[in-house]
Length: 125
Image (cartoon, rainbow, N blue to C red; front, side, top):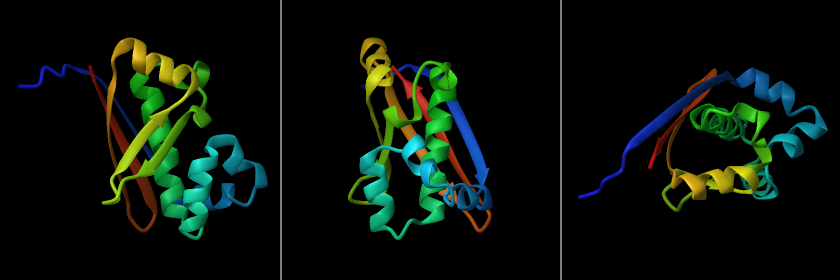
């Protein structure tokens, strides 16, 4: 039996048009996303919904950790998909140090509809 203990949760929602407008700025993707994520987006024709989902995961994780982006950087959180399309979080930098030091296990869920994308992150220990 697993002894995972619930620690925190974070959620985020964003309007897709805001991400679409942000993508017009050439620096937006490199400021918020890792090289692996950008390759993933390109392989999916720069899908606004996918970009928005990943953006929401980063916000939700920063909220769940409790630091916001004052301590961790958005580029230190990489969100990719497994073979079945489920999102998974890979951390780097200070986010990775927190994950390892505190024994965090991240659980993530994403969704989108015509006008919005959202994500929820639950941290277990």
